[in-house]
Image (tube, rainbow, N blue to C red; front, side, top):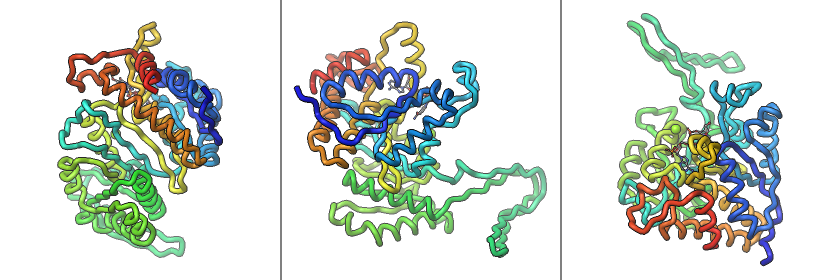
Length: 398
Ligand code: NAP
Ligand code: MG
């Protein structure tokens, strides 16, 4: 069999622990037998990040800016315990944070839906994608404890010396205070990423804030989205027969729960943090959530939404065969290959990416599953298998 050709390489960002093992299995079992895989390899495993003073993470993100599409394995974000475990020189920052800061953009998360694997919300028939603004708000806030009666003020000083001042609150006793910010630039980039993504997947875009209460801050988000939609996207949306829908966040939550799914839900940073975990757990398994970072200038970085599955890795190190679910990581690969194929006009490669996803879904539908899906599938003839058996079954269908 001649292998399917590629033109431009993918940026391949390898990672840690169980997902690093799965990474190689996916390539060996379901990709390289069929595709003449071209990648530029960056080892973001924690040892190599430490060895290179994290330069490898920066290099991989910069190369992604040049090549346009990356696929990333889950990586450890070190904490105190990892400092000793890996004998690190520094508590390196989250690679995802570093990559996001270089590429700038929005993280889109959506579940992989399979007939028979029932979401807890029974009316959801199609996936709901959450688009999370990943800049500012409470994640970069300034907080103060107030220890007695005091006046809190907002003070803004412009370069020309102009000063604006407003009283926030007159404290009669102790309390707390929080300062938040965002920028028109970041909100606009967020809006464009969401509109572009909705056009890409041909689904409606929903957006919600609390603008009735937050009449300046949240209202700015609403206005920027509305203006960019009118000026740049309305015609394209109409051509694609999709829509843009704005509502209040509490109304959005109520509607989402009653919807049949099949749309993109843009969320402010905090709403997206909370709602994506709600969506993941309502869909049953973390291992069925995909994730892609889309930059405002159309650069894509695909990954799984879950981490390195440390608990399984420690069992693997003891020589056990684990039944870790490779679906989200496999979808990172198929998503990256499909995007590369579209950019390079390679229909055979695009077709392969679609078939790979189809074969993996058919495998689950046939009752061959990993352990995490066991409680979600009500069937007598199901078979829980190890990761490599699962991938081998997918390769057989391919
Ligand atoms: P995790 O790796 O997502 O795993 C949490 C638990 O979820 C696992 O113990 C497992 O449950 C279940 N799970 C997740 N993915 C699974 C899969 N593919 N198949 C089957 N079960 C799966 O989160 P964590 O244990 O909190 O974090 C581990 C490391 O990952 C940390 O060092 C963290 O820094 C890193 N992390 C990286 C990323 C990223 O790179 N994007 C994201 C999050 C976390 P059971 O053990 O009950 O089977
Ligand atoms: Mg969260």
